[in-house]
Image (cartoon, one colour):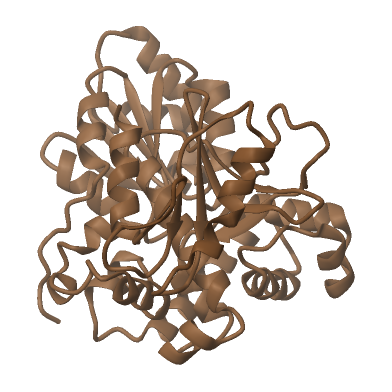
Length: 409
């Protein structure tokens, strides 16, 4: 296998900046998103690395956490610390002994909610938190085999679906994506679902995962899932929380600020890697991406995952929503910043029409008291194309470039 140069991550600069201002830093993200590689690249010369994926290391830390941490050293990266959460209280003691020494401890975890809860209990005010997802489109531009192609939205979409964005399979074209994802799911089920969350019915959980992938970009109907799987609604809620904690899915809430009961209040669900959706739904060919029954949902998932990555890579909490009213007015994605509303429609087409801007126009008319900015129709167009006075058709790269400027204002 040919060696591939390190792919610089967008989040790297803000991590290097913020570590100077906090005693500790946490980096969350799904398994195999590149957390360890990123931290080794940034801090490999200044910090030792201890991985709790190693059962022997984990056992030592659990049996005598105080001795373990005292012998660990001065500047440490604790990898996958969710396996040894009891260490966090000892980290707090060491930090409090010298609050002015910043950048001493860096921790990673693959289960965000559990990790954040433990951090909140132990290291509140002493730690800064970041999230690392699989490669963004911008990061893929540094990959040799994609360098001249990824600027085209169609090609970007195909690659995101049929290969995915996890670093290992995005970089190495000789790795079969189906085999990789199959191994990934089994590892995830065994290491995290069984051991960390103590879910006994792995088969039912896996069936739920398949069903959820088939309904990506749809409004969550917990009762339907419960009926289809013969599992209680409370169990479905728990499993959704596990997937969200693992950062495999993103729950998009409805926008109902000042809108009362005029809109749907159930969230929508998206996967944070479209390649995983295609694996779980057995989609393997280009034709299925553009004319199959899930084509529109896959493109919508692709756009939303890239927007979420952009926010995370800038160290900013996403303020993202969708809108649906009882009379079927729907806006696929809403971004709110400083009381300004930015609406987006997502259409898998190369030839957007004026009719596709109607939802944005209606949104501005019905909710005229809101500060709604001109909308964008994210599509496969090569160049930005005006559709109406209040809507512009754009491609994903143009959209992300403008959003990046907005985030950093």
